[in-house]
Length: 372
Image 1 (cartoon, rainbow, N blue to C red):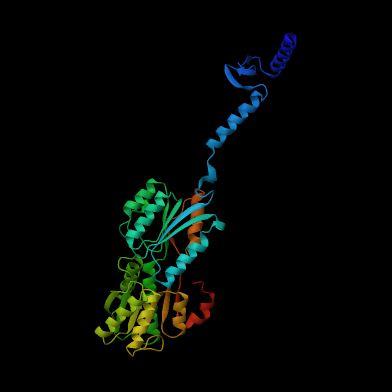
Image 2 (image 1 turned 60 degrees about the vertical axis):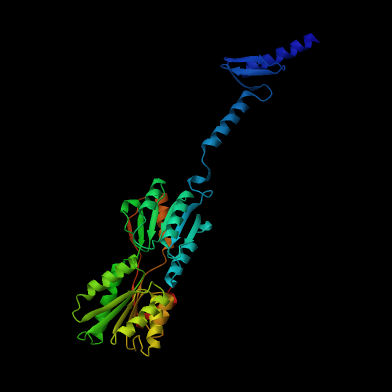
């Protein structure tokens, strides 16, 4: 029996010496197993082989070192958080829809959306949560221009790019990646230039023209820009008189209330400038309730901004003279910027959307092609 055991051990030792390098040693464990010891380190039993044990260890190390998900959160999806102003107008709803249709899982995105209901504290809280959730990108439509410096600094510390859309922001430009939206000052200038051309065509350029403006939300960059652009151009017109301006907060109810106040205060109003379509719809109701009319065949010239489908319909119905476009379809544009940033490409800090000016006489022909 002893001879058989010695023969088996001798056979095992010869096999192991044949298969291992000269630095390998054979050691018997207390349980009687033959173990290879390489450079003083035990690497496995003879039944498994040292190579299998080492490969297994290397594979475990490799798995720990390889990050999951391709660099973005959500298993490879790019995580985008969007802090929206609210849902106060048809334009705003179209902008939201554009974002939601763009930032889908099918397009490679995880999308977090917060309607901030025109409350800056809610918006700041939403931005803070995006940062704590470690999103890959933040898209911000600021409610007002001021008050975002601290949260933008926090995003920068967290290495989260911020893309500001639609409304402008007063923070230092180094705190956000870029801004995408409309040239609001140009929109105001375009509206004034249209009015000057229209009055000339109607042979009214020598008349005194009394103008009232229903402003958007106080502090909003759209309000500031459109007002600045229109008034700067208006000052060049000696016959134009800017009677008054009050905020309608970009809402139909606001437009209606301000217009009623204007009609009580002023007997002779020639032009009403509404800084979005919803305000214009409210103002139109107030004008008609007062027994007056507006539009190309009415008493009062109506100028509006946004150029939504409902705005076009109001032109077709004869209530609005002209609608200056503010393009809300920013989703695809923002996505394109994010894809460039993902590739490490630089983007221009100011990005303007394409927009136009649409007079009532073109509305019926143009409406079928409108996407919002």
